[in-house]
Image (cartoon, rainbow, N blue to C red; front, top):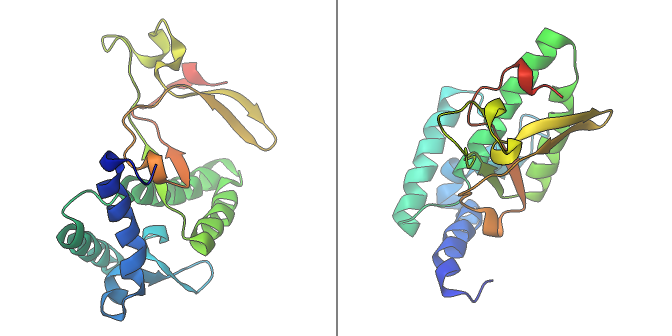
Length: 184
């Protein structure tokens, strides 16, 4: 994969998200302190807790844009982490579940290993005149098919996932609000 010409810009941009985090002059933009471990981490594995975090995110993205002149491959996965962090907290508060603690454990793993995460957001959508549960092929949208003690089982297709070629993991996100008829 690393020798395929079409992947070289992609790999270079992703590599810069790691390399620049080791330059002292870019520490503010490229690193943060984990709220989970209190260790210095790559900003792409950080959960936003302040306005300064958001400002530094924008500064990081501008810096990477100047250095790579292309997409840096980690943005959607980074945004997905932040979305799941707050959503899992809200769900637990409302339903008395423990998804947030499980996600915090996962976040420590992501931070400790400085993982690159892709965000899978685009469903093929099938017949766009129909709602997800009306599709002839139910896998045109990712959906829950089973619930088990260790978590949920999902099925479905995702398309056009920037960064999937060289990401360590993929966060799968819905593109539409799913109604109760999609419950497993």
